[in-house]
Length: 92
Image 1 (spheres, rainbow, N blue to C red):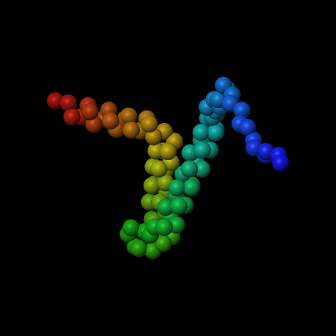
Image 2: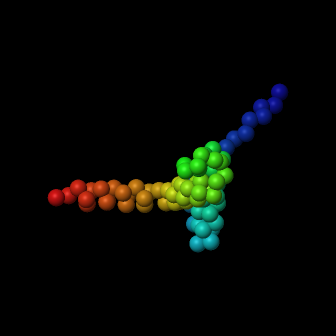
Image 3: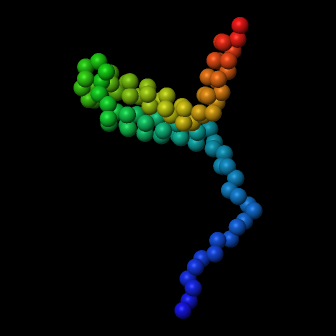
């Protein structure tokens, strides 16, 4: 009877991080923006009139989607900025 197991070869060459071009970063943020906006808009209603698909509600969904996309794109820098703002504003 044959033993059909696969052996995983370990290599010292781990996958280096791929650097994106400026157009790649731009595409990534737009894709995230549209994705978050669509997800938010599918489950939300307009905060003013209460209807789904209202233009004002879509603008608010786009704003929330842009904020989430920016947080996803560079969240470490965002948290450092907030931390620095809070620590400098609390100093006497």
